[in-house]
Structures are given as C-alpha cells and as structure tokens.
Length: 424
Image (cartoon, rainbow, N blue to C red; front, side):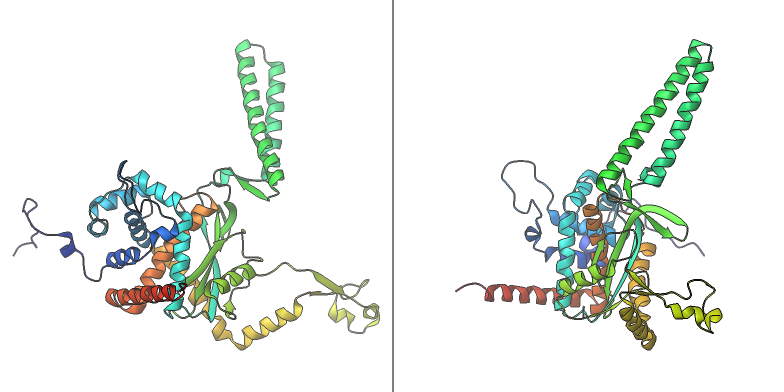
C-alpha cells in the first residue's frame, strides 16, 4: 500500500489552455458577454489604433479581468496582475496577456462612468428578456468603508474639541517658557508652541472649509465619504449605498449613494427605478428606516381640564392632553394597514434585498471600496453588481449555452429595431 502519487514536476506535457477550462466555467460567460458589448458606444478608448506609438491593451482585456476579479472577490490591482500571470482561467480569459498593476488601476479610475452605463444597459437587456418584471421592488441600503479613516473625518464638535485642547497646550507651554531658565529648555518649549500653532491653523482651515461648504462633516482623504453607522455602536467613514432588487429573480436593478442614513431616500430611489425600468406603477417594499422628515400639527382643547377621564389620559394638570398629528398621518395609517393585511408580502423585502447584500459582503468581500470619490465608488459598485447579475443570469438560464443564445437573440432584436428606425 502506498500514498496517492502525483505527477512528476519535470514531465513535459503538450496541452492548450482551451482544454484546461471547463465547458461551464464562468470565465466563458464573461468572455462572451464582454465581446458582445459595443465598447466604443460606452466611451472606451483604444478600440481602433493609430499606426504610430506603443500598442495598448484592448479595453475588453481589462474589462474581462475586472469582471472576473469582482465576481470572485479579487479587487486589488496587484492581486489582479498576479491572477493574470498564474490563474489558468484568467490566462485563458486574457489570452496570456498580463497587464501591469498600474494599467489595471488606471483603467478602473478612467472608466468609472462607463461601468455604470454598462450596468444600466445590462438591466435594460434583462428587462427586455423578461427576467426583470418591475412589479415588486425591494429597496434597502448597505454601508461600505471608504478609503478615509475616522481620524481624517471632522465635524464642528470635533474641531471645537481639538481647538480647545490645542489652546490649553499652548497656554501650558507658554507658562513653562516663562519659568524656564536654560536656553535649551526655552528652545524646546518654543518649538512645541510653534507645532501647536501649526496644528491650530490646520483645524481653523478645516473649520473654514466646513462653513463654506455648508456640510455637517468633512473628510480630508475622500471628500465624498461621510461618517456612517456601520453596526450598532460602530461608526466608520464610508458610503451608504442604496439598492433596488426586483422580486422575480432577485436581480439588482438600480443603485446610488447619498446621505448617511435612509431618511428621505425612498422617493428618489423609487422614482429612479421607475425611470430605469420604464414602468408606470410598481410596489415598493422598504423597512421603517426610510422615513421622511415632516411637520407636526399639535391639537388640544380647553375641555380637557374638566374631563373626568383626564387622570387616565394624561399626567399634565395644567395644559391637558396634546395630540401631535403629522401632515402625512393619513398616508401612514394607510401604509400600516397595508402592511398588516399583507404581512407575508411585506416579509419578502428581507428575502429580496438583504440576500444580495449578504452575498456581496460575506462571499465576495465587498465591505470596503478601494477607490475615492463618489463617481469612482459608484463605478466600483457597478462592477460588483454586474458580476452578481451575470452569475444570477447564468443560474436562471441553467447553463452557459442557454445564456449565449439569449444574448445573441437580444442583440439581433436590438439590431432589427435600430435598422427599422432608419430613415428611408
């Protein structure tokens, strides 16, 4: 009896990459999908080349690399470079091309808006294929960490606290300077005072910028990032990404980022989803965090003081009972009644919206972004969501071949529509 034996490392073999890739491998879907995209229409450069100059990589090569990386949780440009040289599937996908980490990183920064446009076009295609229904939409948000630490995030309260501390330290050093005897000690104290004054100027500059912008907070590394509550008691600097998921096949239909929480965000997201899906009506499922700020009208009556039931109604002995009613009270009552009458329907929200976010965070490691600025962050989110929808698409169609046939069919349909609209 002996152990299972491996192959000799020096054994010469003759094979091609095509033989090494399984027929149902996800890279085959990525390859077909990207080749079907009209990259020039989305603003990608280097589609056609000039005769002079160093030859660049075709944008499809880098786009395929990013779709693969974000599908499998490999997002760092240096890690993607390593995958291109070592991973058999990626070597097949890129035809043995190995772009440098700098080229890979620049591509993500330069085409953030193009990634989002591809996502929108993909959603439109899924709607045309009947995989997105647009009847019931679940809206929810998730937080991702930004490339900005809490240390480099400031609000007025934090600035005031730091300025108070700095002024106190300056006073301490000045008092010590008056009592110092040796020249060396005075020199050290003078340097410390200058250091604190430099720090004070920094915070005063941040304070001026905060007042000029009118914001509640400001981040110095990624100025679009904000302090958000990640979990109970855990605050980070990041982005609150709003997303909408269709109920038919749990496909993501829209996303955006805005405030630090979900307050007042529901209407904007819902209207954007209607425009993307081109539907007149739809049911929207959202949790209670999507509340709106509204005014209250206070009602009371003088008869309350003489009412026999006053002790049971209120503890106030002077003003009696006050009833506050919002301007949207009737709508709130109707919504609560709908939720109560259709509790099973409302529970779909958690199944629809939180499932994709959990998959992206836990399985694919998308709990932080690698880019800075809202535009670039949304481009990165586009790559993640395209990878998610693409893998869901293949699962729904039950195979690569069926997926390819549907893509070919929808492209032919678009071509026929385009040619039929040409003037005679």
